[in-house]
Image 1 (spheres, rainbow, N blue to C red):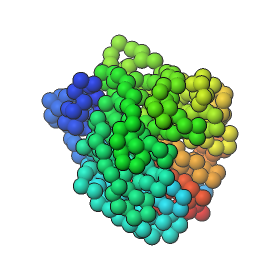
Image 2: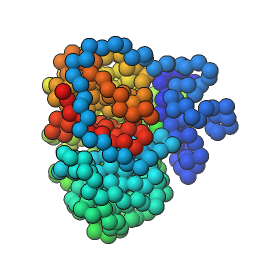
Image 3: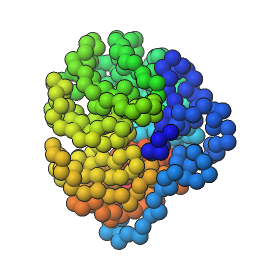
Image 4: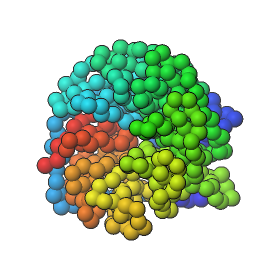
Length: 409
């Protein structure tokens, strides 16, 4: 087996999707028998191949603290990511933050004050969320349902079964609600009552990462989604008719593990472009209208990207953070200080790029030269959810379920 970083690989065999829950949620393609001696309490997947770590996480170096994060408020949201390798990320819609936990808690919080507007407990384990828009809050469940709540009250409006587990936030344009399932389907449900409007199916490869990218709905009425076979496609939100399909990556190598090319990170809409990343593949920008490739570079990432200062920021599968000048091959800076620390996707805030790691530290890097200029520990259980930034405030949802707002100081 290749020793390249396989920190979040998971079995996903198309003919046996229903067996996926029997596997450790972020393990590499190993059967339960092969994992019999594996310490399930150890959440660092780099320890899963023997007594010694293949790629131990970098030790944190001392830094000159040039910027600090000052806590504004903190709210507990159920059990957070739970005991599974979920990545449930809150969402900001207008002046509200909507968050959810694995054990079914959904909560609405006033972004400025941290006051809880409402709290709802669903009778289901949440694995995909949180989506919000057009007066709705949307989550996906382990039991293959999309559940829709009223933004103002938290009351359930409807729930509808889909083909399999939902791991990413459903999205809406006020006409349909689209969700992506782990069996390679993109499904549109009616906004009003949840009946299925259309479905688009892809073919799963033998081995995939545990996760799916979040579909996006463009202002021109297209749904764009990335899949585990390395493709990105655009379909009509109204009827699911295919507009274009392009490859972000092409599988290479003799073994299935070398041919994993999932598009799992959040897609980034930027004007008339959509940017996507793939594991063991590329970063690519496509024209939204035609699917034409307008920019690209080789990279391996299962996270989304961020923009700022004319740069594209991304972290690769080894947690190397890179700034590339937009639309060029020019690398502005690289930072390897957090290698193998399982960092989140980068988030731009002010003059900084923020990431969090498996030990629960939030790191602030200068957008100018990539130096780490600030660090704060926010959750002893670590952070997997993407960080959110809005109006100069950074929102961090720790694995334990604590959602905290920080101001830069």
